[in-house]
Length: 294
Image 1 (tube, one colour):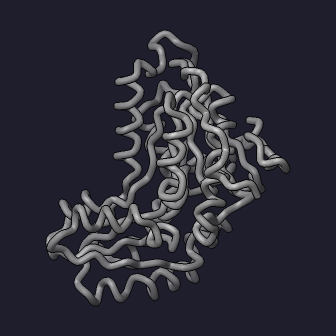
Image 2: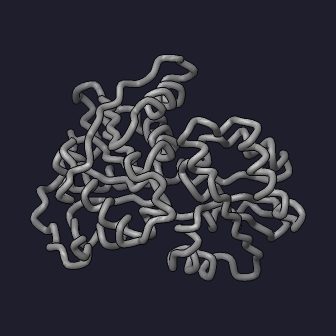
């Protein structure tokens, strides 16, 4: 594969238009937790969501490979008219966000950071747990956040291998998943943790299951509402908010894999308790590594 760092910059990308959609992508279902907050806060905005289920999970993959996926997806979102790109995946954010901002300098980006600073504000014991994937824990960005904000606090990493895959498979509410979580989280309770950062966008999808395992004494911190607020701020600052007299907002859901679970979950998350699955478009991954055609 061609070295990602040697590809030409995308300085010629057309300026985004206010009528365009918000582009959101993740490796799979997890970004729906961010999409939900964006639609709640910015109901007039159209959204184009890409689930790269053909490559899920991202966490075990080399950072360069994830960065290549992120660039191809971003090119596809921009070609489809996206006016801002939300990298709704912690692993992709730490692997690619800086490079994306350099390659697409006219495009506003919002990424995911583990919510260390809000957790510091919430903790009473001074002991914080971070439930995240190995890709996030390996990153220099995560280490710098802990150094910058957590001086004098104890931050305990809590990887939970297999949890993302279980959520993608629709098993997030199962007894087996609760047992997996119990094995991962019980050591945090034993060490006096009172605040837990949900450091992967998949994890808020099973927030109730996680809270049952931790018990009410542990506060869960989800960065998605803050991400939605940042999207709103950047749109307003750039004059990119949807026109007040514009057309009705639209939602497009696109996947590079099997869209059945994406449609079912989106139907539940985005339409209240509706049992109707959302319509999902298929988008095969291009064999030549070019931009996705959305």
